[in-house]
Length: 357
Ligand SMILES: [Zn+2]
Image (tube, rainbow, N blue to C red; front, top):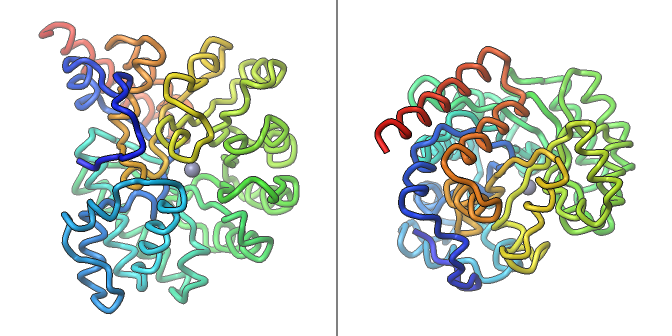
């Protein structure tokens, strides 16, 4: 269990034991979670052991201490040291497969994992080898762990248009089987969304879905830009949507969901406290919200914890939490048969819980 020094002992993060147990076993889909940002101390220890020259401790306990979230600058430092440990295709494969193992332990059955190929390719891992590694891990995870992975390839906005071009080329020309959507991450301030329109146009023309981050650290104008310029089908975070009633109405009417990541929003200070998180206001406006973990070990959380927080903030009981889980499946980009199967699994789990609870 990772400690988080900067988070108060909020009762919000502790659902009742019963509900926590329900959430732990509930089959879930995760729609907003990053590849490198999912490297847990256990995984980093394995990577560090492969590259002793990097000087990162290969001891999971020492790493837990290192990972203890202090502030956003520390998060960036941890994130970059993990990036530095991903040096060859085998590292990529190991990271990806082990992330799926961590997901399986949380009853996550399906995840759209945001991968930033540019980070690895620009550090010298050939694009073909990178894609082969994630695809190999994806197939093994589905076969051996029962976790279905799909990819969102995102443009690291801070790396500019060269990164956008390279990400688009890899996504549209090399197009691995597991790729379903196209995203945009990195800082929002000073990185206007509309400049990425031509890249999103190409990705969408190639059949990918549009899922940019927007409105996490900037106002609702960025979300409007994501909708109009990038034709967003879901919004990553969208925290500031609540500042614009017309936008909330638009999101609700068009059925454009928000990928909400409560603990991440506190960690990055997009929101002051969990108690003041706008997820309740979003849901009350009729906007479909999904609950996600973003960079879970780096923010000292996991998807089950985020579901617990959301249950408290939204006042949900077990059937309500099951609806939350079902909604994530419905607005995912899994094929219809896969969605039906996973929703049925959720229904069966809830019915069994109610019968035996
Ligand atoms: Zn994110």
